[in-house]
Image (cartoon, rainbow, N blue to C red; front, side, top):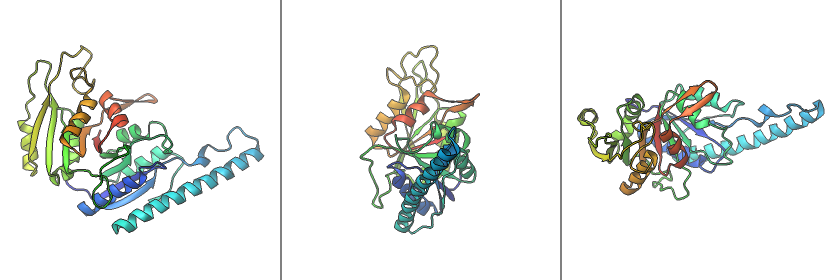
Length: 296
């Protein structure tokens, strides 16, 4: 991705919606981009009134419509506050009955999607993040739900100053690296983190380091040792390091180096009616402690 010109902020009803808007606005200012917000929760009226008598259904739909209006008003107030604070115009698209479909439709013409890690009570549908990751065709930047998230002077979550890139020779990892290039170009430090192979050999990284260098990015390298993996364990996908899953190893190294952004491939696919996510992806979506950019 050569530039960021359109940012989509997916806001829910959770406590991190303000942080999502602040980060999207900060990145828009930094990259000269526009921001579009979407209230990415399903409307209450979508499931109201089913299996009820006509009279009861009418009341249920009425109450659901009132709840939708109140939620939309709160979302609009959040967006207006962020727009005023950052001096940007941020249009808001209202919630729809199918939140995933609405998010994907908007993501298909966006360069970057910013959203919050799922938390109980945020109004997201089950599997929302994974569905958007697999179907968006754009990188997703997640804001973690940790309580003490460091912030920049403008109140946005600290993100992109010290970047950790989880590298493996895969399509998803390559896509994430390219998608993150505008952020890497503005970072103070960039570190490639990869796994040694089963024999302890370090993978060749001259090519990817040279690629980054040609884009003006100087990266250091950190190789994580690998223990004797079981036969079922594959590189990154099965999450094997000596006694520690890969996602936890990445988060631990991010904490040790004060990284404020992890860039990684998002592994997953739609299987029949079920969404199957890779182990590292699933763990990171659940346990992230710093912002994470994922590309599928």
